[in-house]
Length: 475
Image (tube, rainbow, N blue to C red; front, top):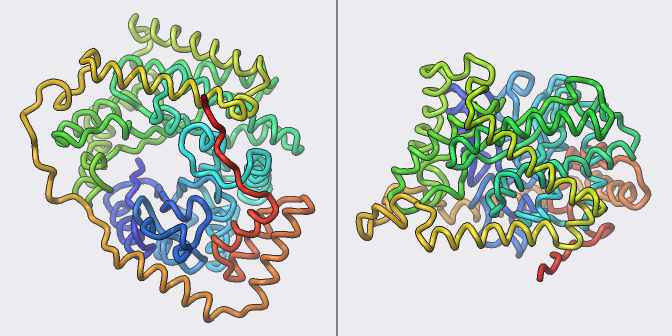
């Protein structure tokens, strides 16, 4: 059981994480604010108005130490939602462990590190695809050698589905990205039979109950076949689909938000029945704002009721054999395989992304879905049917105090003012040299964060070498 709860400063987020661990979560899930995700420090002009708004503002090793204060890194698994700057955030986590004397071999967790879905669905990329793929494989290689219990990538269908993809598209596009990562890692000299054991996946769960259960069953079956038949990997552990599920954020409604409790409960149940290993339940007020402490606790309690009171987790594949589920599983696997084969036959996901093909398919699916809602063909309770008139927005939603941004800006500026200039400048130069010359970047990034270089400074040096990606125009 996991629960995202971070926002604002590292100090406030640490308080919430420690509270949720005491309440029964089995691991931390950390989402970072937009400036951190795209490699800007909190005092950068580009960060104005966004600091701490959609996650934790994190600029430096000091911030990461504050975020993880009192949390035993050798006993708590941490999942970090971060992509373009994944190597830097992993380096910060490793640096905290080193300062505490915790061996890297004892660390467990996940860094999302899935950059391809940023180009098709989410948009928080920095560098061009080829440079981004180098960073992805550097993280995979570093973890394989130094942090063996860490999942170096979480290949995400969640954001693809949230952007408008159908269930079979979610499977197909996610696996097309996964095959690109495996090929890139193999080209870098890594053995998929070994690192394949640490690949993890991240899916959405929406509201069509039978379809969602079947989607996860189809995905598990298809991935095992792809790994065995297409990649030639016979290691059974590398063939397993290890996946986390988050309930569908886009399915939540600002109208009658209490209805979201029912939606989240049914989606969470479908994820469990489909075989997920890890689960996050959205809070009922997330269509309006970041969750309040009370709504985050209710979302966690939803998981706990499913886990401890229903018995559904006591049986492997409890709906296996049911005609509707088996028929839907077969249909979804076949359709996903057809979409995937088309992408592979045309050169793979990277080329499809560069041509804008995957983006176009997602946009067209989203448009069709919205048309069905507006026509009343797809019923959304409390939105296009069973409304009770204009309802006022709840008054108890979470509002981020603007003082959060001012404090974070002061914090990063104070760090820069008191640090020794020699070590961090030398460390940044080493990062730039490694980026230009080749070799794994993660180790020199660890050195840089330990020398008090900031997230924005490191990302900026990489921008100097790699440049910035400009969005593919989809016509």
